[in-house]
Length: 245
Image (cartoon, rainbow, N blue to C red):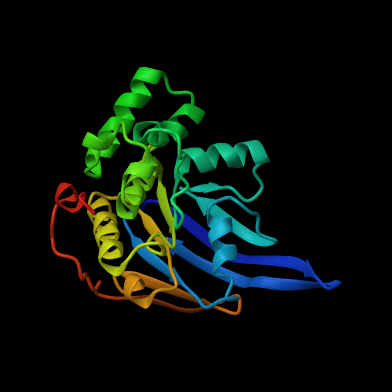
C-alpha cells in the first residue's frame, strides 16, 4: 500500500502566553491519501491556522510526528525543511502573493528559479503551466492587468511548478466573489481529477462542501472528519473555458 501524502500523529502545538503555555493543538491525528481533496475548517481560535502552518512546514509542532510524502519531517534542519517545502508543497494564498512588477510568466518561474532550473527549461515549464490554467496568452502581462480570478489562476500555476506532492490552499476564494470562487474551485477539481492531492483551508461551508472530505477543528481537537458527496455548483467546463474570469 502506498504511503499517505501526509500523516499527522498526535500533533500538539503550544505557545507561551501571559506566563503560561497556550495549547493551540491538543493531539491532532489524521492522514491524507494521494489524490484526495480535503477541506479543513474551524472557527476562529480552533487551531486551523496553526495546523496550516505546520502542514506547510512554516512552523514546527511542539509534540507528535509529521510525515510528508512518506518522510518524517519533524526534526529536519531549517535548510532541509525549506528544501522540502519548495519541492513537495505548492501554496495558494488568499492574497495571491504575486510579484507586482514581474510578468505572469516570471511569477510562475519563481519556485523553479529557487530550485536552480536553467532559464530555458523554467520558461518552458512556466509557460506550459499558464497554458494549463488557461492564461498562456497573458504570459507577458503583469498582475495589475488581470482580474482577481486570473491572479489566483497564476498562483495555482506557480504552486504546481515543482509538481508538488501536496497542494495547500489557504482561503483561496477569500478575496473573490462567489461565482469566481466557484470557478477557482472548479480548477482545483480539474487538478484533483488529474491526481493532485489538495487541502483547502476555508471558513466557508459552501467551499468545504465542494470537497469529498471535511475535517473540522475546534479548540485544538478534531471535532469531526467526514466524507461526503461533493456539491459542485460550477458548470462542467474546461480550464480554458473558465479562464476568462
